[in-house]
Amino acid sequence: MDLDIVSLSRLQFASTAMFHFLFVPLTLGLSVLIAIMETVYVMTDRPIWRQMTKFWGTLFGINFVLGVATGITMEFQFGMNWSYFSHYVGDVFGAPLAIEGLMAFFLEATFVGLFFFGWDRLSRIGHLTATWAVAVGSNLSALWILIANGWMANPVGAAFNPLTMRMEVASFYDVLFNDVAQAKFVHTVSAGYVTAAVFVLGVSAWYLLRERHVELARRSIAVAASFGLASALSVVVLGDESGYTANQNQQMKLAAMEAMWETEPAPAAFTVFGFPDQEARETHYAIHIPWVLGLIATRSLTEPVPGILELVEEAEAKIRSGQRAYDALMRIRAARGDVAPEVIEAFENDGRDLGWALLLKRYVDDPREAGDAQIEQAAWDTVPSVAPLFWAFRVMVGLGFFFIGLMAYWFWKASFRDLRTGRLALWIAVCSIPLPWIAAELGWFVAEYGRQPWVVEGILPTAVAVSRLSITNVAITLVVFTVFYSVLFVIEMALMVTTIRRGPTLDVAETEAWIAERARRSEAARHAAAG
Image (cartoon, rainbow, N blue to C red; front, side):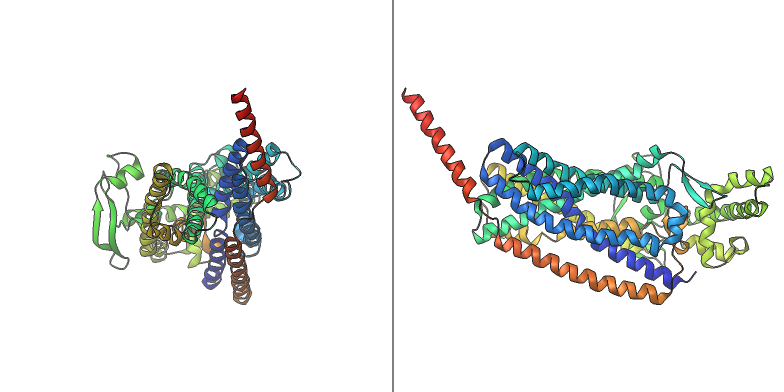
């Protein structure tokens, strides 16, 4: 397997996936925020809330369209660049993606049309129902995608068939209620809610700085701050659950995130700061907080957390077990149905480690022929680059706590101080707009880069999952995607900035009707009091 093809294919998928995720979190969060705003409009009958719903809904629509366009391209790559991955685990991985397209996406896309074109054609309750359907559909789309992604990190509910050389679904219930998938879902959608809340807060703060659309901005800040504070707190709490599931299913990723070379005795300490040195296999100038990692990763004070060196030793043992499984697999396939019972028993004993033997295909065509040096090298291949993971995780966590402080401040202002604040606080809110995207991209970097060298943890190495394409083909498509996505990004930013600068459109007729109705009710009340 040509490693240049692997690297280019990984780069192409990573670039398209991370670009696509620029749109996803804002879609998730804005869909719920506009549904909340329209709910207030239906309950209060105040035109300002309808105006708010339409304005933020326009920004949602721009973001939604480009999110769909970039997501379709990403899914095509499973068949084009990762054909062996699609063959090997397609029976399991394809089911959630199909359900997402048939159920969640069509629900979302259908009601998006009703949201934009149904204001004067549907009743208020009917239109509100369509708006909430958009929010539910957006979140259901994320659910099914993250069920598929979570299965790649914790491949439960599936079994390998040696006759078809494919993973097959054994329990769809286990796939659906995979602990990793559920933790990923709630953590990801909460991060999306924070992204939308900071976006609405920042744009509204910009309006207050310019003294434009003040009433809309004040109400938008009140909604965003309360929604964002709850979401930011949940991100931190649910991040704890992600740490626990990582220790259960992806111990090497957790050890690399902590730059933890030696096994940490219970209760394990959390490394706040340090300089990981992968060549020396130590972390310089490390600063620790006692007990914290043990509480997060093991939910106890008595269990140790394994370090990189111990996990490499375990990987070597699994690779040797995988060699025996690979030998039994080749004998099963050579027997063409007439398989001796002892061969089947041998495969059943070691079959769970078959994927570890496939790590050797980087060095030999037949894993059974690998020597001790190659086995040791393959075991060390399970260690991702420590420093990028270590720092990406800490920047992400630091931003998470910043969002809690930011939202708490504005929640306090909106609740008790009538939003009277200085220009510095407004500018901080404006400048914070890009930070949730940085945190989200770092989170996905930690999740996906930390899983290497696996595309499916313990089952299928990334190096054997790619299509057999030429370097030229992959390089050309990578350049085309880069140019195309850059153009899309410019279009997205131009549309968003233009819409924000123009501001909300005042519905004059409805506002005048509302004012007239309020005046009529006041006059009726005065007459009733006088009578």
